[in-house]
Image (cartoon, rainbow, N blue to C red; front, side, top):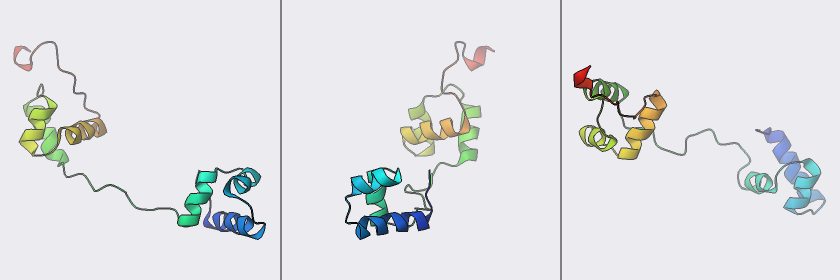
Length: 108
């Protein structure tokens, strides 16, 4: 749950005004003490990503899946010049199963 900046500011003011510890203030306000500590460091909620944007081109990945439906993650990663874990995350994001078929795609 995201608390308003006003509530965060008031919570820290209460802590200072009554000379309370983080845990005492948290108990009184019904929030976590870790939240109060975090608010003390940075009052405004974060609005940016902590990770860089993906470098895997979605269209290239979909084309690769169509061309090589039974390929391993490492094979896809080598072709697209990215990491194996990156391919796995991208496939999961797209809802594509990595499970191999019992019959090869040639015999269908």
